[in-house]
Length: 364
Image 1 (cartoon, helix red, strand yellow):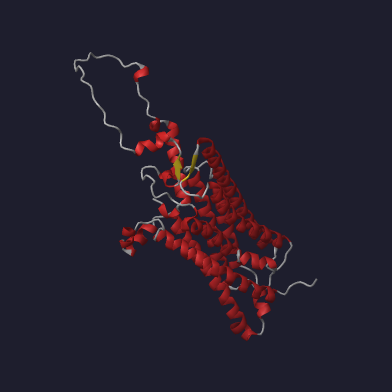
Image 2: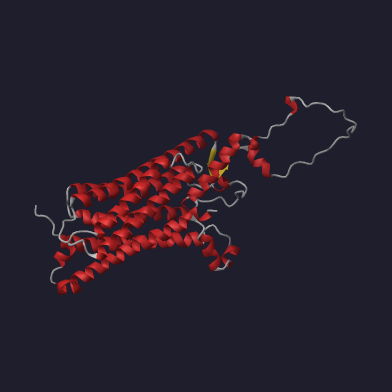
């Protein structure tokens, strides 16, 4: 079977990347809008000025990550379109597009690599941030993905530097370039696989604990549904990265398509989670209490819990003798409040972590 010409692969890449960019643009824009105008907001909240909303959104890590992701993916797509125009009009008057695309020493290719790596770093960083929230901001849990994320940053600088000093006429599959690109993809894959597995495990444990204690969602959507949302979105990028690594190992020009679309696929995966949750897949209970963050998502089927919000019966105070002698209170007379126990505090912290994970629009 004859090899697919590079020029044909490039045209196919433009079509695929443009289609994926359109999907990403809709999802990412919707995600940003939902962070500025949350779906669960009361009608009175819509009277808040847009400038004030935007300033508040800038304090949300998810909003900042989505913005950087948008810049990276959009910049990469623009440079892809610019290259086709240069190849067909400016480079040798458009008579040698195959030669132009084979030469990656062009300055615009370096700029394209910068935007690509920017998008990948932003997507992976937001995934690690979600993992950090799920485990109640535990830094030990994110030590491994932080190291792989740092490795991704180093590889990104190496790739950009390699293309900035690329010898004209050298194949894109040269040993030095291939080592950087494959390492870049593997590190991103490890970050996604680890973070996805750890988050999925946390969701599974929480669901099993809820079933054993009688807790359930305040809406019909269960944690298993949220788990499916997250895994479906994460597997999209994971599968794409695996194919990219295989194409690179085979030195196939298909690798060009997979590499060019890595950032936009990562952006789609990231935005899918935000939009599907922001649109109500993980609904928030309208009767939830504001004092506990997880009460936005769970309602516990416990009579002792439900009666806490009811008006207590009137208390009749009997007459007492105020001349009470000082005495030491026995341990049996000491009242213990369950809400002040370490287990409850730990549960409240975990509930807050889940609330931030499922509702990025509600970030502090």
